Amino acid sequence: MKHHHLFFAALLLAPLPALHAGDGKLQRPNIVVILADDLGFSELGCYGSDIATPNLDRLAANGLRFTQFYNTARCWPTRGSLMTGYYAQQIRMDPPQRRFPAWTRTLPQWLKTAGYRCYHSGKWHVFGASDPRSDAGFDHSYQIEGGQNNYFKASDVTEDGRQLSDQPGFYMTTGTADHAIRCLKEHAERYSGQPFFEYLAFIAPHFPLHALPEDIARYQDRYRKGWDQVREERWQNLRRMGIVHCELSPLETAFAPRYFKPEYLQTLGPGEIQHPVPWSQLTAEQKQFQATKMAIHAAMIDRMDREIGRVLDQIHAMGEWNNTIIFFLSDNGTDATIMVRGGGHDPAATPGSERSYLCLGPGWSSAGNAPFRRHKVWTHEGGISTPLIVHWPKGIAARGELRHDVGHVVDLVPTLLDLAGIQPDLAAGAPSLPGRSLVPAFAKDGSVTRDYVFFHHEGNRALRVGHYKLVSAKEDKNAWELFDLATDRCEQHNLAAEQPERVRAMSARWQELQEQFTRDAGLASPAAQ
Image 1 (cartoon, one colour):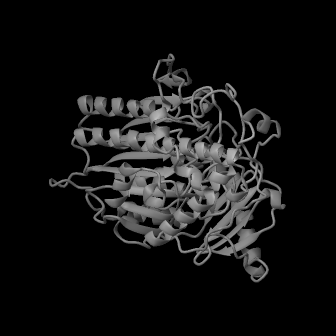
Image 2: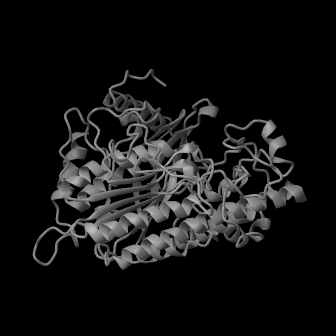
Image 3: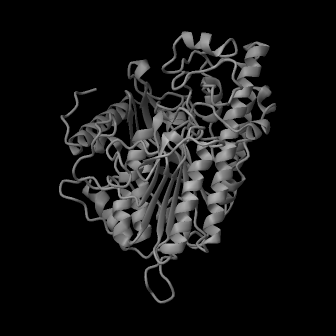
C-alpha cells in the first residue's frame, strides 16, 4: 500500500483552489461534517425523495452530489473510519475491540496541529475512543448516551462530561443542533482567528420512531399509497436526476428483519408485519399502521433538515459561509429492524410519542434504500450506499453537478487533511492511509481513481474493483455473487457462473485484504473464510 501513501502525499503537495489568501498565506477552510444515522440512499429531496429537505437540497444545488459513495453498513465501523481514515478492521472497530491500535490518530488530533478548534455534537459510538475530548481531541463534546432509546430524554446526554438533567420540551435532534450553534457562537466570540471543525452527528432517523407532533402532522396521510409506489417514484426521480441507471430491485418479500422475535407482534399489535410483502396484501389496519410509521420517519428527517438549517444560519451570521466546506452523509442504509427495547412500547401511547417504541421495518426500509437491495448491516448496495453532498462556495466552482467517482468514508480524513494543508506524519507502526483525497473531484468528475473498496460486517462481505462488485451475505452461506455495477447497480444479474475466474481472483483479493487489515490491527490472522 506504499503507492497509496505516495499518491496521497503528491495530492497534498499539489496546489489547491481557494486555500490561499491574497497575501499568499494559507487560508484553511472551516469544516463541517454532518452525519445522519440510518438514513437511506433515497431519503433526501435531492436524492429522489418526497420528504422535505430544503436546506440539504440547497447545499446540493449549490455544490456537488456524489452518486457512488459508500459507508461500512453499520454505525460504529463508519464512525471509526470517519474519525481515523482507516477501514474498521484495521483499527479494531469491526468486530469492536474497545481500543484502537497504539498508532491510531483521530481527525481532530490531526486538525489541531494546523490550529483548528474541534467540536463534536451528537452521537459518538467510537469504541476505540470513549471520550471525544480526552481520547479524540475535541474541545467540546455533546455526547448522546443511553442506547439512544429516547429522543425526549435529555439525561441521555453528557456535555463536556456533565450529564444533563431531563427538561420539558426537549427533543434530541434540536438539542444536538443547539449544541453545535453554541460552539460556533463561542468560536466567533473567542477564536475567530482560527479555523473550526464541527462534527454534527445526529441520531435521526435511527429507531425508535420519535418525532414532534407538528412534524408528524405534515406527513400524516402521505404514505397511504404504500411502499411499492414510493419505491417506484423514488427510482424514477433518481433516473431523471442521472444518479442511477439500473433497474428497480424487486421487494424481497421473504426477508425477515434481524433481532425479530414473534412476541414483538403481540406487543406492537396487528398493524405490524414481519415481511415486506406487496402493499396490496396488507389489511386496512396494517396499511394505516405502516403509513403512520413512515410519516413519523419522514418527520424525523424533516426535523433534522430544519435543525441543519439553523446551524447553516449561524455559519452565515459569523461571516464564514464562503470558506466553510460542508459534507453531509449517512452511516449506513435504512434499517429494516423490528424490535422493542429501552422503556418498552405502550400500545395506548400516541405513535411517535415518548412512551411508544416503533421501528420502520423492512417494507419502508426497502423504500429508503430504493432502488437498491437490502438494508443496514448487509453489504449489498442498499446497506452501504449513502448520499454525499459537498458544498464550499469558495473552493468549488460547480453548482448542482453530480460526481460519479467511487468513494468511501475512509476518504474523508485524507480529503480534510488535504484541504487543511496537513502532511500526515504517521506514527510508528501505522499503515498507509487507504483512502483517497476527493479534492480533485471537486473540479472534475472522474478524477479520483482507486484499486478497490472493501467491506465486511457480521459475515456480510463485498469487494468492489472498478465497476465489478463481489458480494455475499452470511445467511446465504457466504456464496459469492458478482455484479457489473456499470449496468446493474441494483444487483439483479449475478455473473458469478459466467465469470468464475473473476470471482476467484476477487475473492482471493478480499481474503488478502482481510488478513492484511487484521495484521494492521495487531490481531491474530483470521482463519480462511
